[in-house]
Amino acid sequence: MAAHADDRISNASMENLTRQVEKRPISTIVFIVAMQKEAQPLIERLRLVKDVNSPFPKEVAWVLFKGIYKELNINIVCPGKDSALGVDSVCTVPASLVTYASIQALQPDLIINAGTAGGFKAKGASICDVYIVSSSAFHDRRIPVPVLDLYGVGMRKAFPTPNLIKELNLKVGRLSTGDSMDMSPHDKESITANDATVKDMEGAAVAYVADIFKVPTILIKGVTDIVDGNRPTSEEFLENLAAVTAKLDESITKVIDFISGKCLSDL
Ligand code: ADE
Image 1 (cartoon, rainbow, N blue to C red):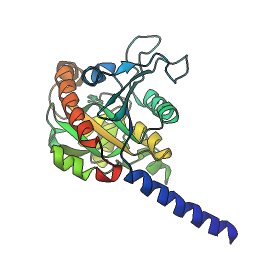
Image 2 (image 1 turned 135 degrees about the vertical axis):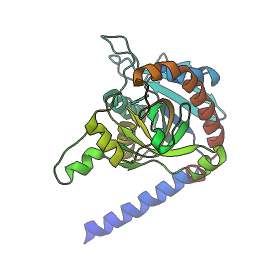
Image 3 (image 1 turned 180 degrees about the vertical axis):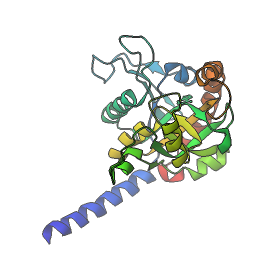
């Protein structure tokens, strides 16, 4: 009996704490961005500087850019370059690691995962569209065992931002995440089951880690390629990367301006 009463008290105080946090202005934001190229315009616009005393272990290539903009502590964390190949460390494993370490080191009020994605024209997506993600799930974790199947899909709702979406007139869609840029027939089936409008390689992993620590998370994705179109994905991605990055920068700046001075419950 006593243990149950204690549980009730701690649950009630947790709810109070959550409510209090939601009612104070957002102070610290961590952006998780897989490719530094995607983050560069924002780093420049917000005059963020590379942290030379990074809170991360010396062995990792993770890069932290930080600064204060409109009274918000803005941090952009990129997983940096692969030590062997010198390319950006994209995909879910580096994204999970940097999200975990960033939460531990920076204690953000809000995480924003921003980056590029493939879009489905059948779901209304066009090149250069910027989407606010309503929910994220995985499409390459197929485990045909009861309940483990649901764990594999790992569907999570993003933090609800109805006012932000309305004010900025942003498109909203579901995101499906996998570790491949192409789309196998199995992936296609799972993406359809996930009802996804956009497809990326990090979002659901960031959402998974943030959910463990109950850090509210928003995902913003710019469409570089049309997955159900007739162009090769990698060609279309490279061709549109600069233009979409510029569009993302514009939208993210508006998002930050909107967030400034607001509480989580105002979003
Ligand atoms: N990022 C940009 N385009 C993508 C795609 N088609 N699939 C996964 N991630 C992407």
